[in-house]
Image (cartoon, rainbow over all chains, first blue to last red; front, side):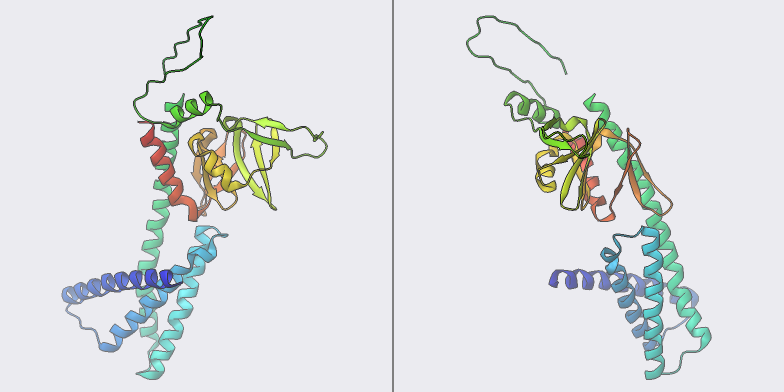
Length: 139
Length: 157
């Protein structure tokens, strides 16, 4: 259990650092600024998304595609709850803001899911080549 | 591999010398054979109608895959399905050098019998065998499966 928590925290810090740096670069290029509330919400969203992705072992029985969809829906629900809480504690989040949050979560998710899809195919091709080589050498 | 056989009628002790460049799985298999330690699996036909009580000796090279169902272990060969008395983990250890690798909680596959490795649109990866059957390479075992293949490839030089 402790090992899993350590692994989760390690992944979360990596994810948050990458997103935070990427956000800073985007802000520099676009000349925009982000608020303290945004930074906190971004961290909570990272925590929720990393948590959901860490549950992948629970979905060993289903296909990776189904797992990706289930995890996306679970992450959407969690983010919805986070935004509702944030909305109640600070300023209310407008509908446009809500859609923006989902968009900025969905786009990287789809890109990463695509990368995962590609990796499965390329890795399988490499493994098949290895099997062929092993079989040929044994003959 | 070059093989020299010498028939000497009055030899006091039969022996075999093996010259090898690296300890590859095939060399280990030869050593096992020379020491009479080559693993053989004993099984009985899974089909009860065919089971007359006699045990069948199975050569690992003829097995496509092992399947653990309902606490029973089955070996799938071209000649049929046989029930084994071993455990899956003991087979995994025993047959490591013979091309058997774990691909899920309940399956060991023989990589020498794999005809094709193919993912489907759902991203599940399947190993297809000569006999037309297929076994899913579970996501959790994909990494160790890849490591096993790389290690086998390295050992073969």
